[in-house]
Every structure is written in structure tokens, then in C-alpha cells.
Length: 472
Image (tube, rainbow, N blue to C red; front, side):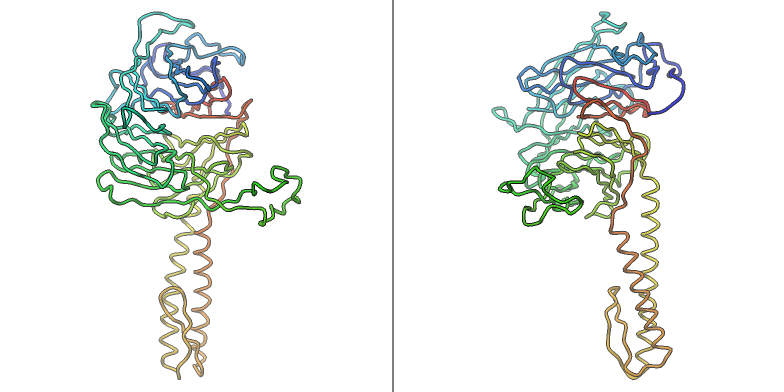
């Protein structure tokens, strides 16, 4: 995805912590890959280490820890692995998400890995001192905790997030409509609340906040909560109603039945609100959230300061989206991946700047319309009377019955200003469409992606049994 020298080193690091010496590095698992997570450590033991989990329809799923081998081949050899397996454990069910513990105030000791599936699990990753394959030291994954809201039954956990400010806190989302805040030291739930009307599919703390979090669910909404005032919540966004072919339609699935570009006849459609599957909070600017709906080809960018609609749409995928993530170091860069086997990188800086300019123009036009409305009203009042016309900006413009030419001109100017202000406001209500700046085509549909926190020029993707690490 970029060009340049195939050799990249981390200043001051030992050979074990060298970054990849080529543009694309591979790992080939024995199992279908679903979840990915880069280690957040920047020492030689964790700089280029990641965790991954399998997706098997049997009670023998795997959690693996892999690391970049110092012996990896700098030549382009797509059939040879560059990462080696250093640790592995099993779980009954596939994990929906993996995360390493944040490095708040230095290195976390011990190094903890969390995963969500049938419950929230915490593992400790520690080196065994034994040398393994590819010049890598082996490690051991020891389960430290398994947390569930009930001892006899636990609703499946769909997602979770680890608090960056206080790494003792993890928040989980579940299909039972709840979100739960856990203290991993006591292994007890601190707070549980009903967050949505239906299943909750994703949850995330807002960046740089210990208390504020957002969630997305099957009811098609994104909601914001504050742990200090849980009696209130804010609906930031509701997915627009979509349409689906009627199950009784004999031509369902036959796209050739409908004329090209004509759309599917509304008589054959049923309206529904699509579930929002995933969300991602901007790591630098907490005002922006990225999300996508079930089977959607578009990523929607939400501005929490202007709730209700998307401000930017990322348009470029040709199939349903599976994952989206903000850059850990840029407030305007994102990456998404999906069923079309494409990995797209986006930069929305120009789109946001254009939108802010449009908002300023709309505010100025509205202020001008309000002022001209007042002037026109004052001029008409001095004439023989007139008919009030509502401007939509808090004033009435009077249409004179026998007004002077001056008052008539002022009235005309006011009405024209109102129209211009309305047009300017309409621009700010429509989201800006943005095309991708970089594209990578994988061999199979991409299920997951992870952006390296300490080396943001690297992104990992999972498809089939393969994990690829790409240099932007």
C-alpha cells in the first residue's frame, strides 16, 4: 500500500523488536481467523505481537498469540510466514473481540489479554523462558478470570472495551440489551444498565474519558451514557429506515428481474430499521464516531455535537462492511474492510473542513436573513399596513398593500435572504460523501482489522486462515 525501502527499524530496539522489513507480512493459522488485536506494549517482547481467535462451529476454538520473527525474510515471499506462534489456549465458543490491556502509566505487569464470547475472560501472557520456532521465545496464556453476570447463565457478550484512563475498568455489551461495567481487580460488576430496546452489538468508551461511553444495537441507534448520571442518555444517531424484499416475492434474489437503475418496486418492499453492528470512537477527537449497519456498503461518520444524522458517508465498498477503525494518531484517518475483500483507507480532513465552512456560511446567512427581516418589517409598519409572511427564522416579513418603493425593495431583499439561508442550512443537513484514498485487495472477504497503536503505519487484517500485516 506504499512504496520505499523494504527495511524499517525501531530506533534503540534490539533485533527482536525490529519492525517488518517489507510491505506485507503473513501468518497462516490452522483455523479460520475472526478477531485480531495488536499488543499495546512498545518493548521488545510486545512491539510486534498480536492476538487472534478462531471461528469454528465446535467447542474447540483457539486463542493464539503470534509475534514477528526476527528471522523473517525481507524478500516478497507470500507463501512463507513472517509471524510465529508463541502461545495458544482454547475456548468453547468463538470470541467476538480481543483486546490487550492499555499501558496506563507505563508497562502493565503482568501483560493481560481480554476476550469476549460466552463471557468476559482475562488471560495473563507470560514468557516461559523456552525458545520456540523462528527464533521466538514461547509464552503461556493462563486464564485469570471468567466474568459473568449470573453463575447459572450468561447472555453472550457481543463486544467490549477497555478503559484507557483506568485499565481496571472494562465495559461489555450483550444480547440481553444490557451494558455492564466490570472491575477486573475484584472481578465484580460495578454497574449494569439496560442500554437499548433490543440486542446491544457494540460498546466503546469515548476517548480520554473514564465515564462516558457509547453503544450501538439492533434497534438501529447509537446512544451515549455517562456513568456519573445513568438516569439520562442521549440518542446520537438512528439509522435511516431501509427496505427489504417481501418474503413472498417470487423474484426475491433475482436482481435481473428489476430494470437497471430503476430501483425495486415499493410494492414488493417492507420497511425496517437496520441494526448497527459496530462503532469506533475517534482516538484523537472525541466528537466523531464511525459506524455501519447490517449489510451496508457505507460507513457513517457521526458528530456528537450535531446528533441525529451522519456528517460524512464513506462510499467505496462493493459489499457489506465487516470492520472499521480510526487511526490511533490521526483525527481524520480511518480504515474499513468487508465482504468485497477490500481494505479501504480514508481521510476525511477535507470533508470536515468543507462542512465546517458550510456551517459558518449557514449561520451567517441566517443572521443576515433575520436582520433584513427586521428592517423590512420596520419599513412596512411605517406604510399603510400589510400581510405577514413567516421567514422561518423567528420574524415575519410584511408584504405591503400600498408600501413605498423602499419598503418593497427591503421586503424583496429579506425574502431572498431567507431563501439563501434556507439553502445554506439544507447543505449542512446532507452528509458529505468521501471516496477512499488507498485500496488493498485481499484474496478473501476480510472479517477483521486492527490498527497498530505504537506503529500506526501498520494495519493487520484477517481473512480465511490468513493474517496479513500491511504497511500504509
